[in-house]
Length: 188
Image 1 (tube, rainbow, N blue to C red):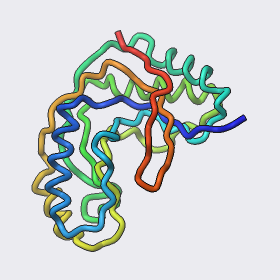
Image 2 (tube, rainbow, N blue to C red):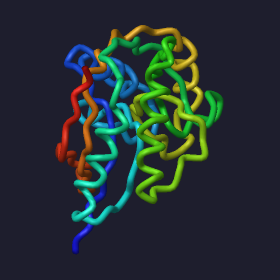
Image 3 (cartoon, rainbow, N blue to C red):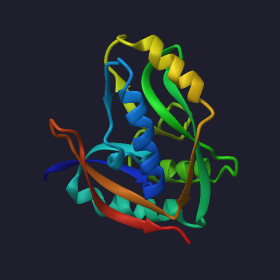
């Protein structure tokens, strides 16, 4: 049986994608060596599953359905810019997701628990909701990048209306990853 690379995520709305494109345009003007993520491909990952047997997609879908039970639709702010592992040594440039209500962490935990029942390893790191803008490839332009991120760290990008969770298939191509919706789960 063939395998597919997959993950579970929350999609973004057009307003947020517009603001991410704008931020990337500003960042691209810096003399940095960063591989930028296509803004239309950016999503809020809840759980990366990796390669899974196609025959297991239905079991995964049932697990996600159990994981979203009792979770109501809500809105959350998209704000702040930063970098992993830390700002002074950026490897991943990100936009933050505010989770003051705790609903996002609750949703991620429920999905994590359901996936662990299916044999997926639990994530050891604490869930840090973010949108990846790009991955730094070298230290070229690092000082300019750090200064920009410090200047823009409080930036507000808008809100996401969290109303669905998607199981995506990911195909890696030289031009970038192509994401296909396998299953969609509506929150109520």
